[in-house]
Image (cartoon, rainbow, N blue to C red; front, top):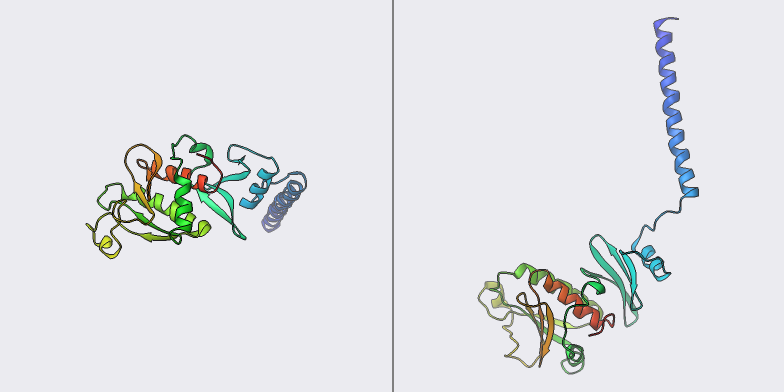
Length: 224
């Protein structure tokens, strides 16, 4: 046998081996499709399976609501009017049950709705060193209530010590009778209501945890 024939025979063997490997790959793929029941691939799939009783630590039912964890956030569906919204939270209800909240917090929402044309001022101290946590908590709060509750949120500051605050109203809990939400990134994690002022309080990420505690109450997921 010539060297050329040996080379051709070797190449043919390699070709047959390669074809065989490809066939095995496709065969194993089809066997997998037939005999393996794949995991749900979308959030809605997991949401539906949770409703049907297939629960884990990353998806479970809570007070009639299905909660699913995906990419570090918790999702549930909230009915608002004729629309159903998929809402993200940083925490699930079990993780915020321990946060104290005043009994009057729900009255605050009703008051904003019916006595103040759904208008609420969002305010914070621009000189506080924890503004990054305030921004995170405010984002969680504002996106939720604007979308599902239809509140008219007005950005404000407690003083105009920085340039951006010169362009918005200066609002504190004491200088207006309109509903005010004050983000306080200091002290005990809690949600309190006094008069027209709702204070969401907590150090660092605890501020966002307090926001989720409030939202779960307003959505009738978690009582006081």
